[in-house]
Length: 392
Image (tube, rainbow, N blue to C red; front, side):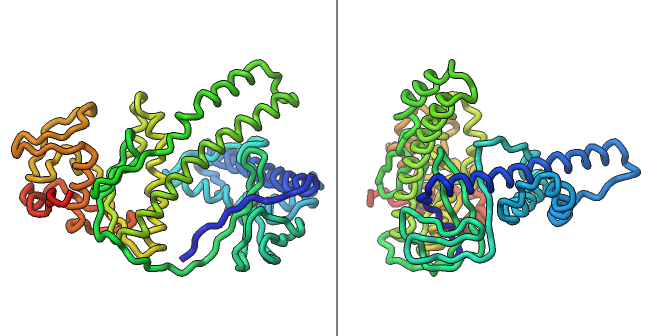
């Protein structure tokens, strides 16, 4: 199984300058290739009879070597891999756009999402050093796995540099304490398990929102491009990074706990983009990180020998009684206690939903997002036979 490894680099000023040069070369190659491909598309649209073949990544790199590098000698101060991988990524972005998976690629700006890729002779020396072509030996703040990566990606976030590469690990089948568990995600609490456990979300943005707003307010009158403006931008970026890291840390703790201690994990296929359309809840939903929760579960279940089950998004887990299986016609979001009018069963709303998810495990066809089960035709009697509220 292949997973990603990412750690921060410990650099001096000379090394930081070299990394900035490589980022600049990769950004220039991307913007040049994007401008050229847009001109080709515009030409093909206006002249249907004299269409020009859309260039591949190899064609773009050949034209870059022949036309751009002679006019920009500073290209030769950096590794050839930086512009080469930038054009490969550009071609991949266009392919995703043509398949309507994502939008049209955008031009990159200096200082925003700076990154580049390298390959070739890469060695990990000792525990905290890695040797890269054209950059020499770089130190890291933590020990590196003793592998030989074929390629690495170096990126910058909030004036901090990170290196990442892929490593191969063997899946481990850890002993499981619970066979099947249902997990209901929510805004009030991040996750409610069918066992009754409740995990609160980090809500890092909500806690640091006032501080972030203060920094942005102080930066409103600074001259763009000045030294004080750049310092303020770094402070804001670091706070954004802190918010993201707190959220990711809490999600990693929860997903690792679920994957290690449960054989089958049942979750819903939430329509996160549709939920974000609600302007009253969009901030709270984004602060929880529902998509990241599922992404981490997908690879951690494979890593620890468990199974992830994804239930169809139209399955009414909150409206269905976990005891008798009767479905309510409507359930307001403000109703936090589920009350069944048929069997007089009362339960906390999220707990009732997680129990229903657990009970549907036997009907699920797929795991890890490879497919989804449709519960629109499941009979209510099936749920009443599977429910076991006495254990709660």
